[in-house]
Length: 476
Image 1 (cartoon, rainbow, N blue to C red):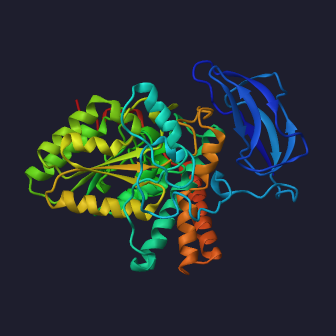
Image 2 (cartoon, helix red, strand yellow):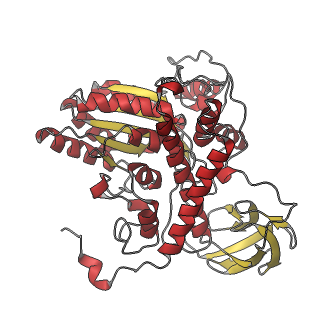
Image 3 (cartoon, rainbow, N blue to C red):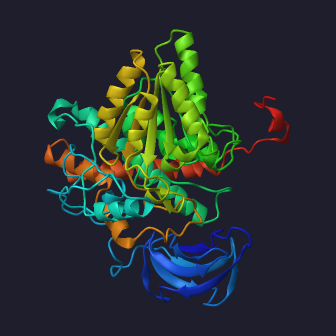
């Protein structure tokens, strides 16, 4: 079967791009997700991945050609996968590395910075006082020798119900497969709008949402697919929304950046950086005034802590002891800027002290550590002990948005974080504890892939919103 390879819309202003070079020759094997060519946009030189596995049958646009979004640039013969093709890795992650003795091998530890998480190694003492701004950056560069993040200590795996552990794994796999599938749909030009994805951050969404009760609520960001799936929004409804269908979770009006479902306790995503923080405080205030025992989990990234909304929302929640869990997904980059270039204190969680609330830094790639930290924070909030600030240290294995080539992430840093993949870590735990076998894990992944593909076929047949729907669900 011949599969057309269409040029994805990677430009920010000018829709025309220049094809720099092909990385594979006609007749060679290709794998879905592997680099196929390089194009120059109005912003950068970007690697384009193959949308299918098979053999590169023909090239329609040679190097140096001007290409437009949606243009067919090649044809891939997808009838079987050639034997010389390289084995496919799991959803874009690097091969698993031995983490025994490394900084993320256990849950406990102490962090003296954020930048140190780029390099694994034994804990080292790092000075945190004295000097000016220059010495701060020097300290953080030294910290990369490796100190461990403070983290909630999960109970021994034997203390958890096996079904609960497998469900955590299943949910993370569903998020990963959803995100990987959506990435290729955008590459194929099948979807409108843009995407901000969360590959690598699955443990933060699943761990926090696992600690919530059905009646609890959450606020999200423009990177909200994982939050939505973890909160219980079916992947079908989420995908329908991304296709712009009237049957989507927001009736086709939200798109990727505004997914949610109030009936399931998720406020549609707020694309304004930090915009969900005061909203979460307001919702929590309403719960408290109504004497309801609900709590709000508020997700935001490390870039949001520089917004005034962060101070206003957290301070309001603190002075009135509101039931909010502020979950900062610190993936080390605000868009393309590394966090240690925009903050002088080493830990975001330390900011909690300024508001008189508890703060905790957690290994955000350990789903059980996240769950335990969130479970304690939810219990405190529900019992009237006020909000908690959780800093969840994680890493996104994809660009800030679909046009981001991610050149600012050092290759060694990316490789090390790929070795800390939250799904692989949870899978190893299930295998080591005898709770699942290799075939069980493969089946979970296959089921997630099959469900996504079925959702794609259904999404292509969904009705689009009618003109008369323009003003429905709109409040002035």
